[in-house]
Amino acid sequence: MRKYCLLFLVLLLLQTIGAVESPKHEIRAVWLTTVYGLDWPKKPATTEAGRKAQQQDLCNILDRLADANFNTVFLQVRLRGDVIYRSAIEPASKTFSGKYGTMPGYDPLAFAIEECHKRGMECHAWFVTFPVGTEKAVKEQGKLSVVKRHPKLCKRHNGEWYLDPGVPETADYILSLVKELVNGYDIDGIQFDYIRYPEQAKSFPDKAVHNKYGKSQKLPDWRRENINKMVYRIYDWVKQAKPWVQVSSSPLGKYNRIERVPNAGWTAYESVFQDPKMWMQKGKQDMIVPMMYYLHDNFFPFVDNWVENCNGRLVVPGLGAYRMEKNEADWTVNDITDQIDYSRYYGGAGCTFFRCENVLDNTKGLYEELRDNYYKYPAQLLPLTWLSDKVPAAPAEIRVEKVDNELKLSWQKPAAEQEDLTYTIYYSLTDSIDTASAKSILATGVRDTVLYLPVAPNEERGYTFSVSASTRYHIESAVSPETYYYLSRFLK
Image (cartoon, rainbow, N blue to C red; front, side, top):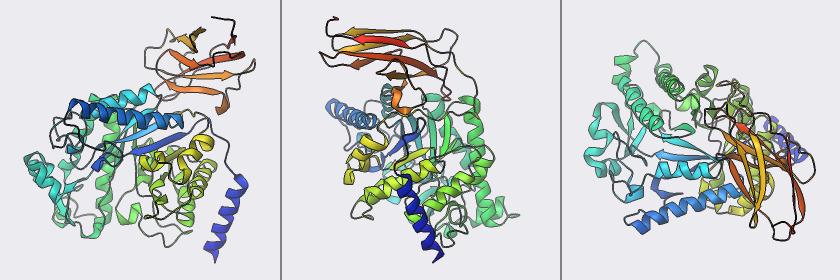
């Protein structure tokens, strides 16, 4: 009875809250899935026309995300021991070319980074950590597979192959991949998925490894410590190499069994020996993106639990948009928007949707609800204040001119700033700008020093503009002095 009373109170509260006013800072993300081509690409490319079609498909996806004011893409770059970028360590995925070890004639990750950045979005590399493929996939990869090249690191479990976290050389191998990826690409972050023991972990065949390396510890503690040490080592290396690259993980949606929900079922800590609470307490994560594909009393209390234990790091609940499908759980769009409202109200840093296609397909009107209401205005990314507190100088020399049917806004990068910056353009149709409001943001995440604004041919209107600069840690400068421009049909 107590459980149902709690659920009733939460639902009543959500009705009272309604749609929380659009935050100025918020992560709005999708998991863009490449395994089996679930989101992209829909078919392998074996010709130049096929390559162009793949690239255009991604551009179409990113255009629609940008239209709905998404600002982050978690792109799956390591699938199951195969990758979508140029690697000297692991084979190229067959998803793009039709054959393992063969690139499709371009670099999908490099292309995606460039296209995300053009649209003011960040691109984070989604990295599947320990699973390395089914028996069929490993056989098809042949001598290229991790299992063939590093058999001592791998274990077969329930018909699939995994890197064994208990073998010390496994961490060395994973770190070599991380180094190649971070050094070779201008990614904004790296997110670790399946950074845990697999399903039915009690039967994972690591007894001999435990006896060799961890006999003094109980098996659950030893397993958690194997993951912990690797997480810390990766985080420390990334921050030494490129400190602005955000390190995150996507753990199970429920950290542990809590008093409010004693029958929580599958949890990160107890079931798969994953301890993201400890990672955050040690300061070894910038963001946690738990996969919270549940409803009501299996969702709301666990958001609280993550936020209460985040140590000032970002908590971005992962929402199960796929659960709206009739053959999944037939959720309503209100089930999703209630979760967005709750996350906003109780300290979440935003939301991530699985999968991208379930959003863009407008299942039950979700895409339109996000575009027209919840994400109606752009949002800046949250400042990573534990990584940097350096405030950049403001942009200078804001200029506005009419070019054909567009207004051209341009500005100068602050002379004192050597590092890469992005820009937020604020505007108002009056003579002053409320820069504290998301409604005043015209565009954010802009990497160029020019922006074109389409205008109607006979429009008569005054505009006020201002521009700020942000570092790669999302630390924002003061805004530039306001610039007023009156658009008249009499001006050519």
